[in-house]
Length: 563
Image 1 (tube, rainbow, N blue to C red):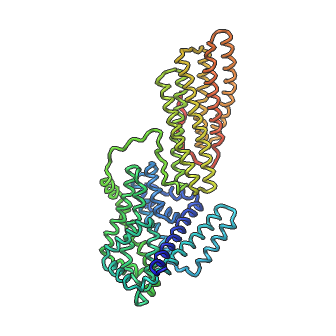
Image 2: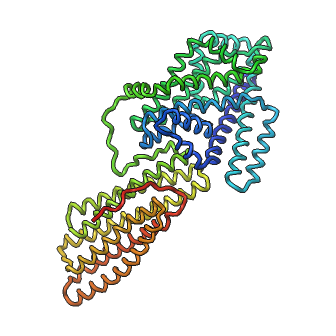
Image 3: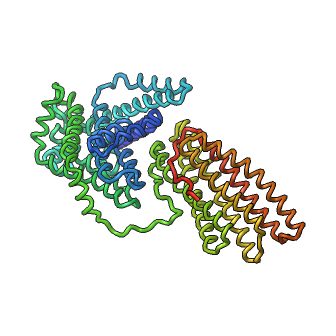
């Protein structure tokens, strides 16, 4: 194999190991952090400084600004946060992502295999999931550095190549060309951390004189600025098909980095002098990796300081770029909050699931109310409402369940999150059963009205009583589910016993009325069908109330309406 191919494959192989290590470390850190992610995000307040802090901490945990940005866009699209809050998170994410470059600036080449071995040993021996995740994080951290080492070893010959050094000289002399190179690199790799790591490693190679860096700090800074622009493409891609505010969040991310690059490109010399002043002293090839990391951190900190008090202006800019317009109206049964791009961040995805489940539960509640009304009034318009509510909740239920299945198959769930996801799926199953039973009741009422059967006053009174109990049961079950309220759960169980007794009494009374000729015998089938459906709805309400004691926090829903 000729030397050019060897260098190319070595560079690509090293980059692949680096990216694999980075992705694995991010995933394992998310699992190890678990529900702490929610606490970090809970730091978000109307105060922009707290938003910046939340974004920085989240990105430091995830080791990926792209992951934080995608998560933020998902939250904006779902209505969990407004545009100014999202922008403050994005500003913080830009600071948090610089931690990767700071870690890579440490010279730990002598300990890489020790780190990999101990990481493997911990993950192999550990029984507890959290300890196993910590071991895998250490293992991935070692792989990340091994990828850097491989790239460094294959790039060494390039540093002495006259053709290559001439090309680098042109890039160093024309800052805008360096910005273009950095942007293109990150667009291709889809990871600013990876391209900055390559830049740090390459800059650490000695030039022809054997002492100075092959590119120098002033040559590296424009490429670094380009890397920051290139990373915004992830946010742009994540915003496709999302709400206008989600798109504006992505544009704000682009604006932050583009304006920063435009500002800093005029002061590369003074900026390089400042970075050299605050960085460790020594031979250039030994300290330039830390200098690049410090330049990366300084750029993002300065731009965050500039933009934080001007978030209102950034909101104004992105609103003008993406003006308000007519939003396509989503169907009632469409997902309003869930985003497939968040399947890789289960803690965030489950928060949005809670909001979507709340919508579905409200729809089922509407189906239960209209079902009760349809039986009492036998109105065609009310029957139509029952069918619409039941069908919409059924379709939405299917979409939520499919999303939860995809969340399982994505493989990023911790044991606790997997248990919570299973808990939600059980609840969704009972909610779906209730909506379909409401439809069955509507079918029975429809059959009765079409054939012009008439219930006796006693039968109507018994049905109204039974329907009133089951309607209250549903909303008590929901209260037990959302607030973990044992009193509501007790009410559901007592009501179920009451319905069981009432069901038996109503059936016996109906048979007696048929025997005495007070009720049409043809009414026996639809009457018993309604009673059977009410009883099964009661069973599902009990299941929901009994299954409310898991670890998942369901969102509060509207309580039953007063009659």
